[in-house]
Length: 152
Image: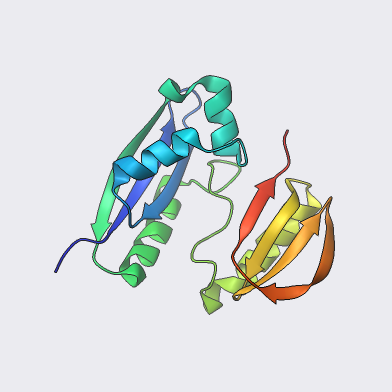
């Protein structure tokens, strides 16, 4: 059986905050993507502020299936305590898992209430809705997800 998924952590050497993610890509390719991504999320804004050299990435675990990777990612997020505000993870993965959907909705509502997310596309249960300046726009529709945090 071949290894298909990598669980990885990105660490800010200045403040110790971390982000845990998973990728099907080569981890080095994913790391280059994180370093070149626009300042959409707190992790990327901090990379711009502190400098990319102040961040490191390490592979935590390799997995053979998406299901195993999802479970491993959740375990590592809990173990390393990377959920905001202690870390850079914003939404508990996986977004489409029915058991997590209600929890993610509540977390998302709190992020919107606290104005940490004000504009973007939010996907829950395979359906998407647009959030503009803290207000929902239009009906839910099927599509891909994008989320944008407010600059702060």
